[in-house]
Amino acid sequence: MIKEELAVSQKLVENTSSNEEKKDELIKESRVELRVEDIIEQGLYGVSISQMIPALKKAIAEESIEKLILLKRTYFYTYEKSVRYLKKKEREYIAINLQ
Image (cartoon, rainbow, N blue to C red):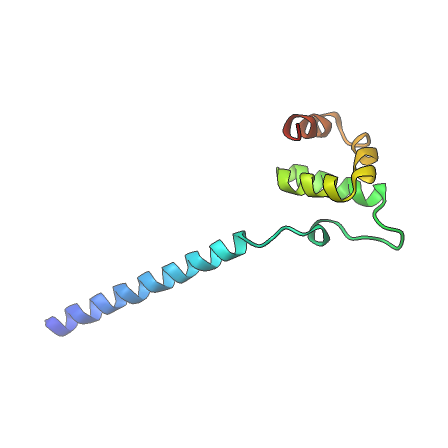
């Protein structure tokens, strides 16, 4: 009887430690720094409007304000010129969230 209880308690301890490890991995993944290279890929002559528009649309669809801020900081001129080609709701989303 005692052996059975020990076996059950060991299984509980093992399950708890594996759950904690999974949580630690998730936390580490969420802390990964956001990089421009993950959002948009540069062409031969830098980033063009045709590359910026899909990146903006994707960031808006994901509701990722951090990505929008990073794109604006990194490629200010292209960002400003690309915003006018977005749909009205997308432009409003940017105007509301980036003020």
